[in-house]
Image 1 (cartoon, rainbow, N blue to C red):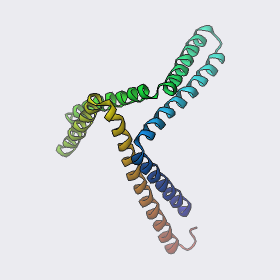
Image 2 (cartoon, rainbow, N blue to C red):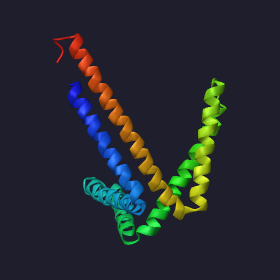
Image 3 (spheres, helix red, strand yellow):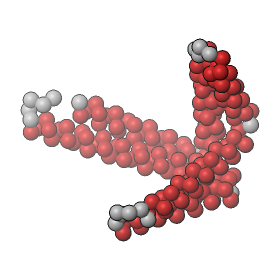
Length: 184
């Protein structure tokens, strides 16, 4: 059990590192891939909304689901036809998310019962999120490349952590096998 789990973790880590290197080497391709992934999601959503519409017994939900399906289909087509503006919108959405999340983290720092260290971490991470959101709004073109580069760096760090976890899992399995000869 430990050997297969550790092998899976190590392979996942290697794959993550490869994806991270690709994202760092070709951030434009990474941005396009995110736009295409969004388009695929929108197309799948459109199909599922159509299925829900035709599975409904009354007219109200049919029209609502059909309308949602048409909107999702249009969003997918727009993403494919105009990937640049779609990437810009995705960057702005991430900017809004980072800014709002940062404000909430700063507010959480002043919640009751938090230690000074926890408050400091909340404020620091909140300020970083707010700054990231402001940068994405101020320079959305650079923000798209920055997102691709951050994705690449995150994926490499994640891959290294998965490989480390896989190696530790394998060591634990070997130790257990040595201590408990009947454990397999």
